Amino acid sequence: MKFIESHFWYTKSQRNGILFLLVILFSIQLALYFIDFSGEDDLNDQEFALIQSALDSLRKEAPLPPKPKIYPFNPNFLTDFKAYQLGLNTDQIDRLFAFREKRKYVNSAAEFQHITGINDSLLDLIAPYFKFPDWTKQKVSYKKKIKKEVFPSEVKDLNKATIEELLTISGVDLKMAQRIIAYRNLLQGYSTDEQLFEVYYLKKETADNILQHFKVTELPELKKININTASFKELLHTPYLDYNLTRHICRYRDQNDFFESLDELKKIDSFPIEKFDRIALYLSAE
Image (cartoon, rainbow, N blue to C red; front, side):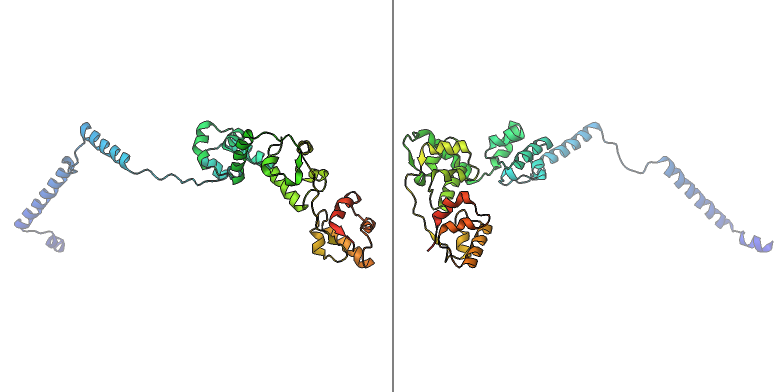
């Protein structure tokens, strides 16, 4: 008992100090409860409007994010993603792809709009970036020139016909005119009018239109190859001879030493008899 009393016995000054400390603690608790020490004042409507106005002005002055740069492109080779970025919807993209699956090409902005069905506003945005092959531009210039020319009334030599002259024929475009001349060069010149019908993708009615104004009037000077001494490679580059027919000719020559005449070609298995006269134009048996 004495031990406990010794620990809780205080002097008068100590009791006064403890009382004073309790008063201070109690006063602090009251102050914290009744007094707002945050120091924040509510903004009135006018101040809030000024701040909002300043933020709006900062947003207007802030630079806009750069738009993706569009480079010139050929619209025939658009991908799904690229077409979608340009603003085409799925139906318009599908129509373009269906057109391309037919191995057809768009050659102008107007044709692109016709195929896809895009509106004028979208066409005005993307058409300046269309980049078509150079020959499509040449085609336009040829058309302008053709309107000023008088259609030829006399029959001219087919082996001397130019691209410009062929373009005056109904049904012949620039690509077909170039193909006709390229095949003429391969043959070393047309030897018969019928060879024109062999031009790749040339329609019969178009060939008939051409032959009304152009015919073979002068036979070309053909370089003949000696079938008995020519190499496999030389024979392979002869018009109308493909790889298999060239192989059969060389095998027949090896088995029989040489060809006594070109008529022996008809003895070769699978030889195209109907093409003999044309093949014979380029060969000799010496």
